Length: 152
Picture 1 (spheres, helix red, strand yellow):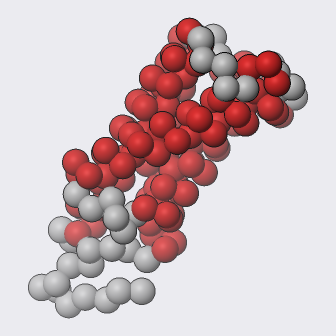
Picture 2 (cartoon, rainbow, N blue to C red; picture 1 turned 135 degrees about the vertical axis):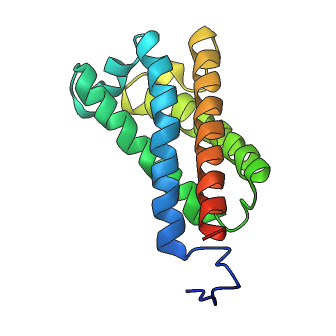
């Protein structure tokens, strides 16, 4: 863990700090993405991942997944995501990665929809937009938290 004197701020929190900060940033991004999913009626589909149709369960599952993905961002890329612009751009790219992994592979596979894997239609383009928004918000929030931490 990095230590600093009062005149030298800590630029990169430790692994746990980056992961927790990323998790909170992921939840922030997940809220924005979740609102879009709610508007499109997709939240109950997320609930089906745990055998439910409930909107409330769908939100909980979605935010838990968002926290995990955000935490992974902080863990894997938190040191490199320095500065607000860079963190936001890296977050957007992370969102695109999760569109492929989650939207085009894992979600259809877990919901026994193999014919939807790698299919790119209207629903998948909306999913891409949601994942990009998730990543932009999560990266931005991560960058803000990092700036705040660096200036303490």
